[in-house]
Image (cartoon, rainbow, N blue to C red):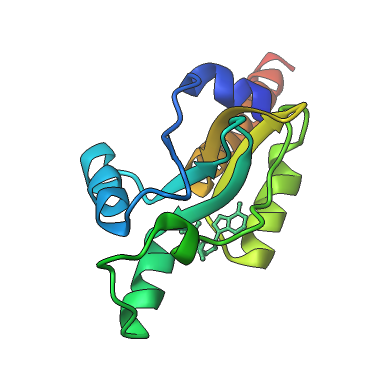
Length: 142
Ligand code: AMP
């Protein structure tokens, strides 16, 4: 299974912000959209970083003041991206090894969407389920 089939099912809507956005506005954005991370894009629209709830927790735990801080101050950069042609398997392996749950999908510098570890686990599960059902029906037909 490729990332493009997940994006096709999920739709292209992806929440982004700029590095100059205040941390309090970014927190409001995460809460409003009920999401765990926002992709930070440069003026050309290319991803330059990612701000996840983990980054916010880490900075708060270090007693960094949110007042006056911007997304650019607290984000993780560079951000690891994938392409629509990448296999779910390979991307899941990267996410597990590097311990992150979000990957922007980019083609020729253009942001196409975002996949989460939940999207990828569901796609794998559906794929395995389909394979099991087809094997079962082949056994019954034999
Ligand atoms: P997450 O598990 O995705 O909420 O993020 C855990 C940590 O990894 C946070 O510091 C994120 O900013 C960072 N992170 C999340 N996704 C990515 C990514 N695709 N590339 C690089 N860092 C990331």
